[in-house]
Amino acid sequence: MPRKRKENKKKEKKRVPLGKYLLWLLSITFVVYLGYFLLSVFTLKTVDVSTGEDSNLNLFSKVSSDLEKTLIIVEEKDGDRSKIVSVYAYLENKSKKNELLIYLPGDVYYAGLEEKFGNEIPVSSFRYAGDFLESGRGVEYAIWQINQLLGFKSEKYIYISSDATNIVKGFVGHKEGVFAGVNGVEEIANAISFKKMFFSIRELDDLDKKIYSNIPFYTTRLALESLKSGKKGYRREVIDFSDQKYLKDGELLTGEDIKVLDSKEYDKDLNKLLANVLDRNLENERVRVEVYNGSGLTGVAYSFGRKITNSGCDVVRYENAPNMYTKTTLFVPDKESFKNAYDIVSDVIPVEFEIVEGRPDFMTTGDIVVILGENISSMYSF
Image (cartoon, rainbow, N blue to C red):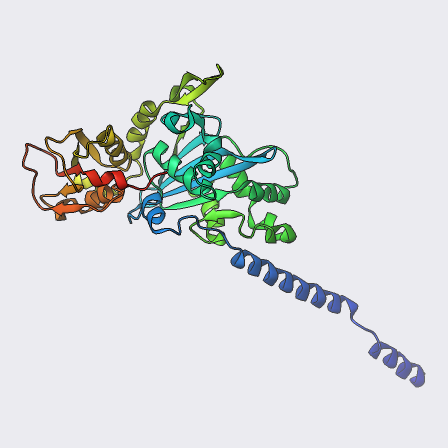
């Protein structure tokens, strides 16, 4: 009997705890995979088109306030060409817990480009139009033109190229369909969730340099996540350009009927909703701005007056100046009392300007007076 006990003990010592080894192996594999995944996420690069001094100055806002603006542009493949299918402008005020989402479908036409292209052109063709004007600058042109359309500049942009869109669709297991409509941005955010990317690590590496943005990839992921409605308990307002109230009938030279953006109707609604997301300090200043055209160019007072209004300041007058001005000039009698408004107005003006702590030599009543000079003709444009 004693011998049998010894034999049993020897047999027990020879047992290999396979379960524990497998658990350790799985744990090590998971940690290595997780490390590789995180390394991929944090090393993926975006491409910033605003590298030039002029484009960096004029494509994006430099104002620091409670109001944060992000522009998201989504492309899809259309045969051999890429086209913009959706544009989203997201305005967020964290202190007020309010947000405004503006959705612009790619099939809406934009007026004002007839001189260069012979017709109104659709938003979907903005990148193609930019590359036509200057090869390699299509993305930059699309962002610039969307700024003109919306009447304001954003601080951040995320341009998801058609190649990136195709890869992202692979994360959710389908290649068809488009990320369009007001809820399209939420579908994109869901598709680029950490869970989806974690299980699509091979495809994830293919995203390198496929997204254009002035923020890193991992930050673009968080920015897209923040666009999901109801996530933070914010109150959300929406401007949907697919609504017929923002469109008017038009016709191409070919006779084809089109839908053209009605900017005045959009501006009216934007100005009503801006109060919900504006920086409180800017609101409290209650500034009155006047814009005068002393450049000799047609229509610039209205154009810049619109941008100042859509950026949150109240423009009470815009018309021609009594005299021509060589250089654009800002008259600010009390700069300290209107510091936030001054930042907004100066951010809109795309050229160097003089500052005068006083008033012009003609009758004005505004707290800030802008006189656009001849140097406005050198502003950044295509």
